[in-house]
Length: 290
Image (tube, rainbow, N blue to C red; front, side, top):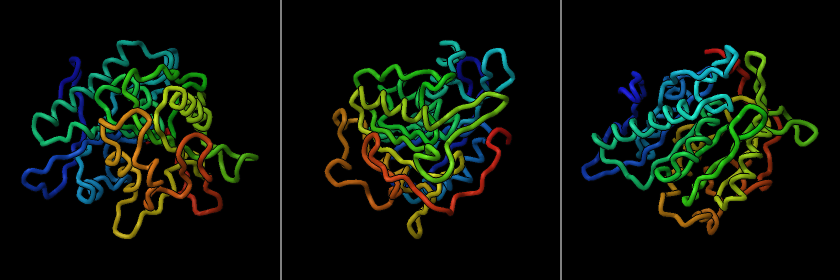
């Protein structure tokens, strides 16, 4: 599509067997620095999830965003050197993708969510603030706000979005395992600090959120799905369980607790989780290169 005068691309994932009269939630999925839309499609087992859980996925391709005065391309704009115009360009890209999908497919407009991984999560946390009037929920997987070069939390206005704040651990001595940090092109990000800064903002503003913390560092989350489910089924289900019309700060999880397909190392609210410990972490990759 063309958005703000730029040629942009995204992958659209539809259930393979849509039924008459069926409407679909929409999940936007923003990839990591060294990743791609196709990489998210494959690693996230998104087609299987769309078929099983009955949603449409929109997986954008990054245009690129360099930190000012450096060659460091973060793929998505989220750092303090990005201008309001650059941020609005990407927010409008979201608007245009959603409008494109809504014009052609039966969308459940009460269930539009955004999911990001690493750099994609850092952008998702900005999008959640800028488009809180359109989004029902958000999932920040190794993202956050603040922490030196990342734009801070400024709030979402009147609509409070339920969220997932997940990161790869605080490292020793707080817990065993690795700390969730990333350094590319001489610029470092501490997702442990940024995720906790995000939680502080969410808590102060009265948002419902769950906290998930593993011990594997900055790698793909060590999820173990139930037999027959796609890898991230429990996380996608969070979005499906939190429609736009929920009252501020509310969630079905407050009454019934976290569902069985949610990782055991998650809890409700800040400092609520029992962080994962032990071995079995996914193999580390260099997230700075494709």
